[in-house]
Image 1: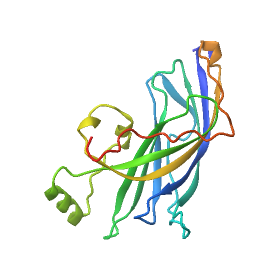
Image 2: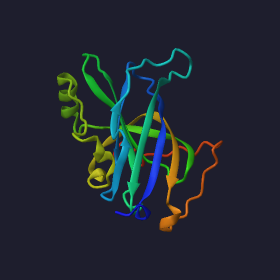
Image 3: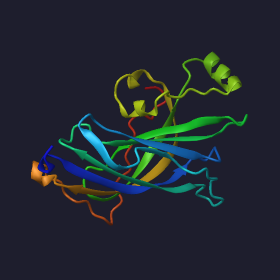
Length: 204
């Protein structure tokens, strides 16, 4: 494939902080999802943060500052990459259970961006299932977290809003204009409006 037929999207940044007032001792996992025409040329496709406690001040933030660093190449923008973040922590029995899923697209303009991801957890479909999962320590969760970045089947999933995770991105693009895509750089000093997951109601 000729070099002129592809463009590059270079992403660095951090999973910065989280807000889960009801919980403590949380850690995060992340992974990228992208279309068939995309390929990671350097960096990690997935990772896991350290476990942290919430701060003792009034904000009660979890601070990870966990680095993200990945480079994509593609021939067209279809299937633009998304980052999926899922948080875990111990329940009353000491079992690690999911505390929230969140997803957002990699920003489509160069520059520095910040996103506040609304996190959600899947809910049991009945009171009996809720009680059973609580006693057994098996809370509802997705077999593959990447499913939250897809549209298929999400309208039948019952979910509950639970917390926020803040992620920062530094985006650099190369050869986009050569392929006819005009992108405008964002204001490096600005903080963009938080991006909602779009799936934060009690029942989808």
